[in-house]
Image 1 (cartoon, rainbow, N blue to C red):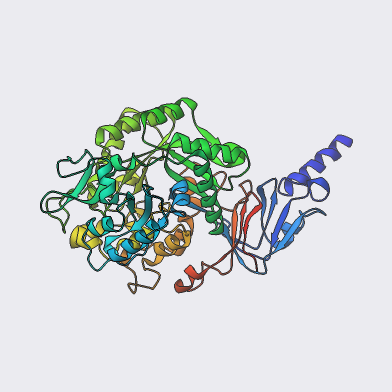
Image 2 (cartoon, one colour):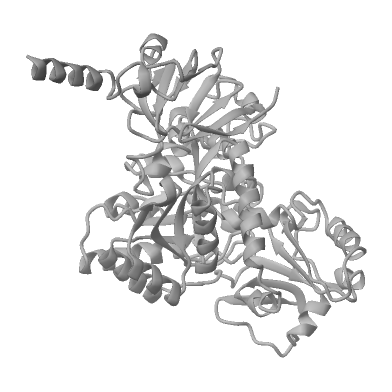
Length: 558
């Protein structure tokens, strides 16, 4: 009888969502009176949840959650505020964001003259010979949309080399002093996978596309470990303030990963990072030898993916196209990682259990990546590989269905569409533009579409891409009805695109991505219901609190 009573007691604990009520077995946190969107199809909404040891043990109504509370339980009454799962940025550059926050910010500049003025101001406080670095210029936002030439920039910086990265990260603008340091002149050949923009006489204008900037960047001192750690910590704190609890960190070198692991081991990494290691044979060898790493440091770091590039970017006309750019006949963009390289790395990834993600923006690059994947799958068949194409911005109609057929995930960024829609048809023409940001066409084939920001290329606020996915309009509501509205997603799909789908795209769906029993208690409290408010209100939403594993990592005072 004593054993039977003990068994009945144990059953009671299990039935109460695996934890007994009262005493030391009480839950740590109960959240009540919320409007909770779980991102779970079979239990889409709730009013309360309970957390024990960093994981969710109950999602349901207030009464059920409070039954699990004890004397030491924190009870948080949300007063009908909205809760969603912690948002996951499916394509970001974590430490780059931190550095961008400290360098000259050129995002939103409306003219070349404004850029020159900002650089001149920075030069006034810089020591002679000190590099001036900035990021974010975009000639498409200027009245004169042609690439700039360096003369005015050089005139205000005679003693300081200047290195200004375009907003897409695929073009750089440098001054005369920077070019002098590397002997870059009219006799310099374009490097493989790069292009030097020249004037009518063949002289470099200062704009360097993709690999053409490598020789200049190599002259800049690399950041110290301390600087990497500080930049990463700043980026994490900023992400937390935006309701982001996870990122897919796209293309990270070994030194930066080491710095991230140091921070995580010290308990100073309030984010779940899915690391895509950079395209370097030594780095790939090191991490393949180390093997799959999942949930290190209390679920802070996963290392099980590789990221390589196939082409450049559309804004700088480096994206690889099947046919010429409409606004630059004779130019079909740049192949920065060829078929053989993608195929070779794909085979290594498949044999080791790693995921492969390929940056491909133009239709030629997307086709090349799909072709290489298909060939590799034939040699090393593997179910559930979850290979990805990052960006997938312009796809030939014949290749749309190949993603689902091959099990390849298109990882896309809503904010790219709302940033590029003003000029993309000039690049592609009226026919090819129909394959640009073709979310609905892809989704209707059955694929998931994880959403991201590509920050610091775009702003890191995930609600920008969330809103873009179902409106295809900019912050001012342009164009009315949305740009190519036939490609819009639903608002529910938009929620999944920043929560569950990124989790599935990173083999993390058992741990994160939705609010369900057994998953980490990563969730966000918002000041308004983003699932029902007017589209015009979404970008005004404020994050009130962000929780990671049941711990508050951000709180907005008052």
